[in-house]
Structure formats: structure tokens, C-alpha cells
Amino acid sequence: MSNDTDTGLDLGRRLRALRLAHGLSQRALAKQAGVTNATISLIEAGRMNPSVGALKRVLDGVPVSLSDFFAFEPKPERQVFFAAEELTEIGKGRISYRQVGGNLFGRRLQILHERYAPGADTGRAPLSHDGEEGGIVISGRLEVTVGDERKILGPGDAYAFDSATPHRFRAVGPQDCIVVSACTPPSF
Amino acid sequence: MSNDTDTGLDLGRRLRALRLAHGLSQRALAKQAGVTNATISLIEAGRMNPSVGALKRVLDGVPVSLSDFFAFEPKPERQVFFAAEELTEIGKGRISYRQVGGNLFGRRLQILHERYAPGADTGRAPLSHDGEEGGIVISGRLEVTVGDERKILGPGDAYAFDSATPHRFRAVGPQDCIVVSACTPPSF
DNA sequence: TTGACATGTTCACGATCCTTAACGAGGCGA
DNA sequence: TCGCCTCGTTAAGGATCGTGAACATGTCAA
Image (cartoon, rainbow over all chains, first blue to last red; front, top):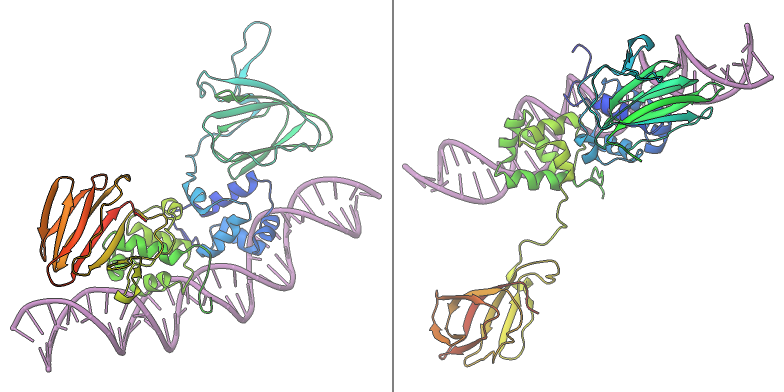
């Protein structure tokens, strides 16, 4: 750990995931929190060990309590993004189901067909509810943020993650975005 | 708040309560935590706003998680020590009741320093409320009637019974009788 | 392309943390 | 009483935080 200020807390990861899940830029969060964007950047980069007061101000800008912030346990790494050709075909009949991540999921799945207007945005997502979810982009372009990972997916690309991880979806580009998604347990 | 580093978090009170609850001195906690006793002292005094890493090290020495630490809601400040002249008089006539603590709202225990003039008598007590009470005679002689039992107590003697039982106190002998009593819940 | 804007990063510097090393108060046995 | 220990507090100074101001990159519209 050459340059890092390692507290063994994943402060940076935690904060970045939290911020992105709420659709905030570093400067936006900094403004709400009353600190500077440099502070956010350095904390997220793990290059500084903030004071409790500073961290509280930052979290008040989200807002999230210190207790909840530290209660959030970042999940162990797992494959999140799958290229189009990585999907496994499990289609039956005349419909082709191409499953994300092989047999990672259990059986209590609800599958949705979603359509995003250009620029549509899920905004913030609940920080922690049990379950898993995933989806496949059919057409258009979808920006997916999961934890501190962000990627723009195109037709055929897919995502899959644990619902406890903060996440966010946003359609980018000029056309509608169509996604087939699934989650468990079913969430009307 | 002249000199204080006030984060609105009661960091100092939290930490002190936690440390004392674990029977640790500042130096003992500091040693286990790998920080210096000065750090503990300054944090508890509210004269410094520790870094998250430092606070984590301190809490690891307890040990308590950051989440639990911040979830812990410190009780509203309440007076703990009372000088003799600070006890609030709630008696009248020939019996003096001097209560520990002025406002018992939200408390479960009422403690009284009682002084009976010679021959003073409580009469028959209301027998409705639940709870327990008891006391120790400090000086003089006290005739205690509980239910159908009656006894005269001298210095060092004590009593304890269920408040629902009819009871009565009467000072006997030539001198004042002093009793320290307690009951739960408070009876006003 | 160009400009305008937003994003995240980096750097110099004043403010603050955290340590080292003291101090005063209080308890206990000789 | 003395000596010795432990307690919590305080002062001085090097290390680090957090800021203000740049920088580099990417996106979008014209």
C-alpha cells in the first residue's frame, strides 16, 4: 500500500458507490455537503483519511447516517458485466432466453421488459433490500452504475448484481432503450 | 461553544460512556487501540475532531464497530451527583421527603431522604399502584406496617415490599427518625 | 472542427490532528 | 509523612487534513 491511507474500511469505495447511486457528481455532493470537490475526490481515491466531522458533513449531503454508512458491507467481487457473447442460451420453444451468468441465479425470478425514453433515469435506488437483479439491453444505450463500477451497455450487453449494492440506470443516446431485466424476489 | 470542535455528534460523550462501560482507563484503551492517551482525552473532551481511521483504531480497541458506535444513541444528559442541599423537598408537615433528582420524568427509580419528627405518621398509604419500594433506617426508630405485619426498625434495619400492599410508617421514640427509601416506579 | 460546459484529478498552503512529554490530583502502602 | 503508582489533562511540534485553484479529459451543440 504505497501511497494509500488504508484504514481497512473501504471508505472510498463506500462513498463512491453511495454517491453514484444517488446520481450525484463529486461537485454536486460537495456543494450539498459544504465541502470541496477535492475532498470528495481524495476520499474516494483513498488518498486521505477524513475526519469524522468532515465525513458526517459529506454524508449529511446524501443524506445517509454514519451508522448506515458503516453498516453497509461492500459485497465481495463477482463478475458484473458480461459481453453479448458471454450469455448462455437457455431458450425454449420459439422464444430465445439467453441467460446472464450461467446458472448464478436461483429460481424465484421475475422478468421485466423495460423501455427507457432518451435520458430517462432511475435516479437513486434504495440502498439495501435483499435479492438479486439483472437485465439485458435490447436496443438503445444504457448507462449502468453498480457500486463504484459504471459502464455504458449496448444491445446484447447485460448486467447482474446483488440488489443490496447501490445501483442506477440511465438511458443515454438519442433513441429509446429497451431492456429485459429480472429480479428476485419479485418486486411488483 | 467557545473552544469546542462541535460536530453535533456527541463523539466525546459517546466514547467516554463506551469506555467506562467497559471498565477501561484512557491509557488502557489507548494502549489496546494503538493510539496515545492524549488522543482519547482530547476526543472525549470534544477538543478534537478525530479522523475516521483514528476513531476506528480506538473502537477496535474496545471493540465496537463504527456502525454500532454511531447507532448508539447517547442518553440525554442527566445529573448524576447531587449535593445534600440539592435534594428537592417534596414533603410537608412533620415529615420531610427530600428527593434525589428534581424531575423524574422518564425515570424508573425514585430515591428519598426522609426525616420524621417524633410521632410523625404517614397515615394509611394509597394502595393502588404497582411497583416495589424499600428503605434503610439511618437513625431513630421507625414503626413500619406492611399488610398485617408490623415491626419497629432501628438504625441499620431495612424494609422492602410490594407497593400494592397497604403500608404505613410512624416514627416512634423521642428523636427524629431518618430513613433512606427507594421505590419504582416513582410515586408522586 | 470549435467553444462551452461538466467530470474527476492534482498541487501548494493554512488549519487541524495526533504524538511526545510533561503536569497536577488522588489513592494506597510503608 | 513519604514514595510510588495511576488517573485525566495540557503544551509544543511534526504529520496530515481540507481548501482554493489549477489541470486533463470527455461530452454535447453549433
